[in-house]
Image 1 (cartoon, rainbow, N blue to C red):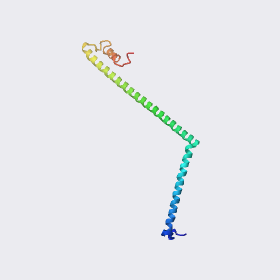
Image 2: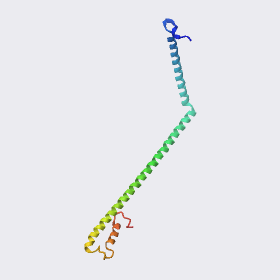
Image 3: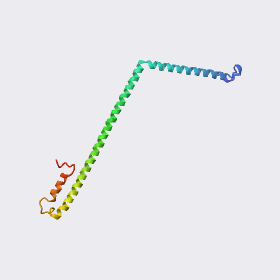
Image 4: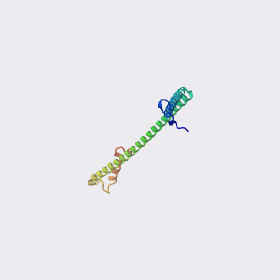
Length: 147
């Protein structure tokens, strides 16, 4: 094979420089042709009914997927909220029951203190303090014993 750098062209240029310029011009020509083909393909694609239908179908699928995800998020949020409300109601019911129990104990203790000096809490008296202790839950706020 010949080495292009050894041959001298007109005006004192080296042949490899001329060759390099030809290569550059070919590269530029190829680049322009690629760009032109790309533009033409884009234009054909923009008016192709099959491609447009495919794009529309993909768009519809994305919308449906978004709606389904949105519905799942709503359902999960509603379930979580219901769970929180049930837990809060259970805590409140336990608190109310504990408060009622404490209040009943306090009332019973108070009644026992008041009853002892007068003899109401004596074992000889029929019913006595036990009747009063049974009345306390009936009097407690929120008690179902009234019903």
